[in-house]
Length: 121
Length: 415
Image 1 (cartoon, rainbow over the protein chains, first blue to last red):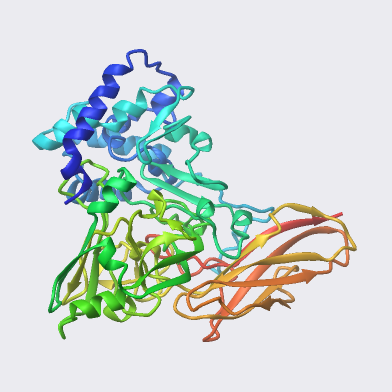
Image 2 (cartoon, each protein chain N blue to C red):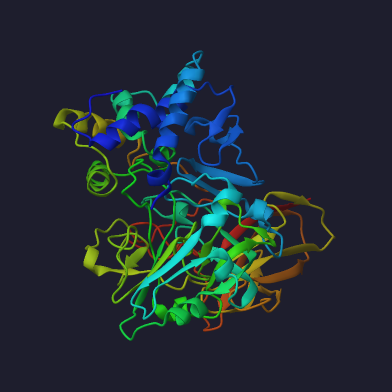
């Protein structure tokens, strides 16, 4: 039996209590967007993609639109993500393929030399 | 919150009262925040300030992800021969359970069921009556080195530090399974932990993996409760976990509650599809590989790490420099480690020690005499007991970016 099954009501009570006891939350812009770059669809990504995991896994990954689409489908099938209206899904995919796409990948080069010597075409 | 279409009732309730986004999004970075994973206060709970995110009980780790919690050790903080608790990397698929150690230990049970003659339910006292062993055991994340692949492998972008070798005390999984009596039909193990699923759905399991019986009953596959002589830290599976040394860390399930013996390959979450699998044949970078052409990762490949000095050292010409680190090779041992200071043109053999026990990593060291001032890279290359060595560049691409055992390289400037 999972932890939550045993202690679900405790968790709910705890979070409720915490919400009630902190009436003076301060919203700071940076922390509200959790590191996501500005752009169309950012809020939709925040609303739909940060309830389970944080933005850290989004920011670490760079994929094609098709790959992001497949990832959304996998999360819906296996990980409890709810269904998304087509419009909403498009907005989310627009954001992800623009800001977490495969162009301009971050460099993981940790030293002076760049090891990008490609094989013979 | 945005519109959502028909989440089930329990999920809706969880989102309304327990959604951690509600909690974390509303907390200013300067206010102390409850770390939902360890129930301790930290200064920041948001992904945009991971560099400010400190994990209680940890020192020298680079945080890749705060939810779920994933952090790797910087190589120069892995210099100890045996990895101390505060320096061991942390990997999670789900959330870290939080419970009071004393209260939960008393009631904790481990169930053994499935293809066994006598299913068992053991409490910790009963478990500890089996013969106890203390071994130093190497664990590496299957995705260690993922950051090196192009196009990127999907997942947390580990670089070099998702590896550790701590000393564990426990009992042999084989002894426990033999006591339950394995049936002839027993083929695979399936381990179940207690980590809550990220979605909060109590019916979902973040991960349940296992191994073939032969690996499970190896003398060094343990069910442990102590790490470096102290009770397992909560981040590392308190009160009980499996340690399957030399195989992907995901086979070392934490917060262990149940072992199910299967009559076929285990198919729990993260056993199927592309999880912890690589193509059966080599593929070009970016290839789409059909699921049926993927095979499960078992023994991890040979690899080494330079843990001293820290990269980007400035050194004085004329003084020999000690360079040292560790090497490991999954189910095999390491026969030699070489280093190069001229990009692989020449190789210097290091002194390498035998492991303190099978499946511990091995310590190597050498003294380097730089003849001239200048900028150098030190490369380390291990060769395993079957003569297999590490690639100079990233090995063959695979969809999820596993098994990057390319040589570790550090930079030294000699002045």
